[in-house]
Image (cartoon, rainbow, N blue to C red; front, side):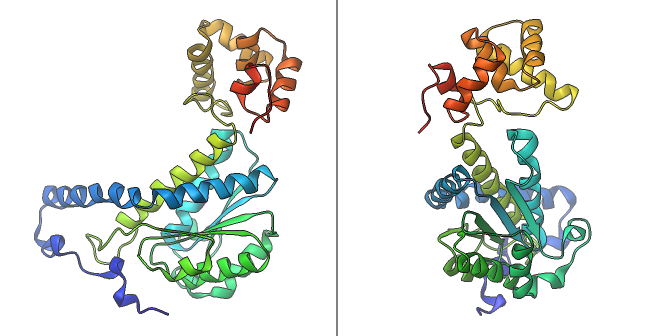
Length: 303
């Protein structure tokens, strides 16, 4: 196993050598300058991120699941991304799953020792009945977390797809995955505190993965989250505004259609765009594999 001391994310940052002598404005200005480098680091990894998206889409189309697994900040970010998919994209809670070392208690209280147990990574995936139809994204800023390496090794042993996301080049977990995403964020302003640039980079990549996957699965119409679950006043209003923007109807008409469609914005959209009833809109969407645009355009099959 590579020495932790050799990792770029563990080096001192020359720009912050005098951090403890800076005033508040100087500290936040420095952090802002360093954060600007993160997007460029992510940019270099875009081809691999896109490859991961395509592989995830393929698995989910066949009824598989996406499981994020990590420890510490990385694990918490995976749980965060997974938890936001059902309300945003209207999927069931078990389609995208977040697994964090130490269990859900680790979301609010650090369980730092949990990351060193490689067997625990495999055990946690077994608890989720991981199978060959699923795909696992292992998250590790250092790229060497035993918990994540163990999880990826187990995933490969059962035939599941594997993606590794790390913030160091030549990461050890890259060798455990079908797709290796390495976002080289470099030394942190606060030495070794990978909740900073590395955490930001991982959040950016997870945003890309889940959003691109769901768009490719028909969860958007134009740039609108047409499968949103309108479970509160704000989201009902958003759904109505999406329908207004997409069809040109007024708010009252949009709200009536949304109500008739059982608060399913995508069904309401097809109704408004084609003049059909709920049953016909549902049929068109089924034929189009959930793609609203295709359902509107004669309900032809999605790719």
